[in-house]
Length: 387
Image (cartoon, rainbow, N blue to C red):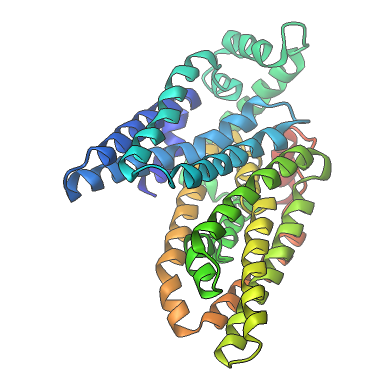
């Protein structure tokens, strides 16, 4: 969470690619420290460095993908980040059955080490290059990304113009972020991150095994099923997000989470009153699987896609840091408070999550714009006008 607060500033100072390098080095050191830890101090140091690495990369990867991708494919490419996360989680579930946790930690360092090498072969973000007046490198990078025979002069000119306007209007600072012209973008970014967490996603994922146990279903089998479900589902979203748009997927996701949260809450309520015990177990499993599936369709990854699209360059540094830090902070609040809420009332907890999902539906319907098929510059200009 602390690193997330500075992730935007770091990526602006050293570049998107260099920020990913820093993140990878932190993650490699962190996993090695965890793998070879012989006391609690080294274990916590390893976890601290892993937190640094994740805090950086959770911001810079969505931003980098959005800045290098053509508008017609931006949603699908941005969502590929979510797909690969699901693949990684599923892989760890399977490998974890056969290996000790220290071996798992060593294996987890391999992707970061591979990315350190692969980063030598990818270009820097063209918009970051434009921010520093490196026009020749900007055009070379766009040719690498779009193809040697592609006409990149119009796109390069549009990027330069937007950067110049942003530079003239203001510098990137916390005061500029809260300017009236950025109000709509800020409400969207912070609102989606808050609702994503307050719908209970982190808590339900973290305590999925306990819910399966409560339903009398083997928890290891259940959590593996959840992990496997996320892969084909993420592939479908990645292939359809630029056809259907962000708003429809977010709406479907929120409606599904609302219904499934209600099902889980109702099953706990009936179970407490000793009614329909067999039906309660079925409702718990269906509700949990449906909730995780619904979350993955939209609210799991699309808030990060939209966050990378809605903020103009002059405040993207500060806004990205604030939104990323807020996400991790809201995540901590929910996970920390979940046990207390369950002790108060299991059914009431999930009915609250259902209510928050209902608020999310209204929020998306009224405030979140459709961004598919539009350049970043067009999206940001339209939001400034609405503010």
